[in-house]
Length: 407
Image (cartoon, rainbow, N blue to C red; front, side, top):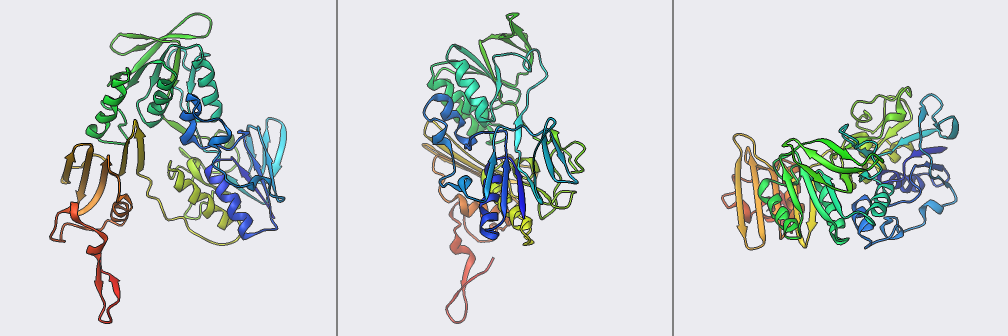
């Protein structure tokens, strides 16, 4: 049997490994726009020059050199024929398979404002090609505007600070890292970046750009009338599932590919995993989805049931943070905060169970909190401070002396 995998990211690589384990004699054909395998989490290190392309490759084996694996690189797929399970790049037929895994990930969003879509010195940051373009432009750029103060925007800022650039970050939310941390946790990072010379304009929208008439942006105008001068722009305003090539394929899409519990699409024999399936933007989840899809592609029915995707890890200037679940409370929630020098911890309790946790500074014990949040385990009836709750509080003894789980 031949399995066609579109994409070469975390979900795709995980699927290849599982297929080869389950069906060693099957053939795997990988088709990707990328010509290298790389970790998106490390793109900022590539921009800064701390890492080169080979050193951000997350594969530690020669799986793509396996005798039953063919990797067709550098092909931008423009069409999938769902009936024949064949992919095309323009009019060129590229490959087909008995099963297909769509693992094309997502692309950065470019706002339809001014010359952002057409300028030669405006870039998104999602792929290695984007990082290469930013690194190349940064050789001559001195002043950079970053649109978006989320994790990707701050990654870009961190890298460009290493290159000595003057940075201005424009963010429409009232805080940086608005979907990753609460205002207090985010402020700690804002202060660290400001101490390095970065200027933040929060609760501000970009409304236009100024140009030099030669295809380069020279300034970014905000909704307060202020124009920030620049000679490069990095856009970090979100991503969109890479599904344009699926039009007319029969594969049902909404904001992403629609899949069932087995990661199967609306077309029999075609599956989807990773960002393109819209279930999670977290690396471990993408890997797990790729593996589960591979089981189903090779005949083993295995449902993907880990839909928990609200997990963020952050580390800038030696300050680590981790958030799980809700970062801001709803009406009726109980919020507990504990803070000391260098550490900030917050628990949101909803109906007696942790709904969210933020750990900043010391982030140990996150696995314990993740288990409580995912399983909605109440901790309000234990008769002790939530800060002192441990796994030991959920175990008892059987009559024969064996431990038992007693949630």
